Amino acid sequence: MSKNSPGAVLDPAASPELAGRVAAVREFSRFYTGLLGLLREGLLDTPYSMTEARVIFELAAADQRAVTELRRVLNIDAGYLSRLLARFEADGLVSRNRSAADGRRQVTGLTSAGRAAFKLLDDRSAEQVRALLSARSEPVQQRLTSAMTCIRQILGDPHGPAWAPVLREPGPGDLGWIVQAHGALYAAEYGWDVSFEALVAQIVADYAAGHDPAAERAWIAEVAGQPAGCVLCVRKDESTAQLRLLLVDPAARGLGIGSKLVAECVTFARAAGYGRLVLWTNDVLTAARRVYQRAGFQLAGSQPHQSFGHDLVGQDWRLDLR
Figure (cartoon, rainbow, N blue to C red):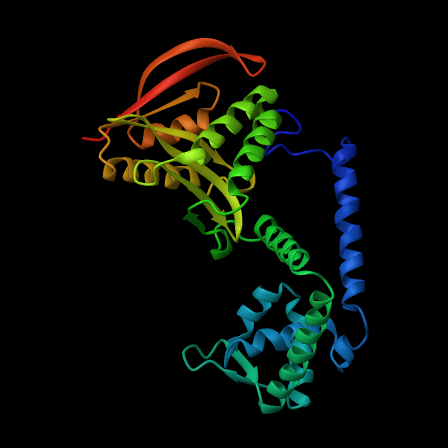
């Protein structure tokens, strides 16, 4: 595995690239906490620190929260949380009781005073962010929130709801994304030259120029509002459809997107009345070949060729639909 391939782990002591990324993340953290004033003694001009406000926000999400669950969600020291809740209880913001279901567990919730404190924090936080966004144009707002979603995807739970893929038809800009994504990905992972991107551009241009929606379709796999994969189903002849340009963005691998796209293509080709579905790929694309095999495709032939700046072995795959 090359040091720049997906999944490669770089040694920060030996990698100037990773050292630079570490510095970039730390610089962004300092910038963002300063921008929102998160380190001020009183967050949003209230009596509460950032940690105290976060506890109040979490408690507002339910009538009662188990203290053990609250500690897990907040990822803070048990003793610190206990002291914080004791202070909130003394101030009349929370009540603490033993769980009715399990007397060994303690539950806590906001009082009416606690909910008033939450409303103050919530209103001021919303107003702060509203002011931050309203000073920017609509496209910039979309870029900002998309970037934030991307950070959550990468650093958060890879199996959480934010990662659930959605298949849809291409919208404005999506066909261009297909070309760009193929060119960038295959250059980075396989070293293919610009002739491959030119081939993809021609395939996409032919599709865009006048496809019959009843016989040809394209799909974009979207994750949290961003394109993460694609595939085309086009007419090869009256009885044969061709699957083309299957791609899954590296950041979205492991979500089953490739299998979903291929299954959608198979379902469409069968409903459109085709007798078979074929595709051409190269033997170096092992992950894609496994997806095709799981979908029932059979290898029909292979042929060495020199393309995209490399010696490759092309493969023809076929799936009978009747």
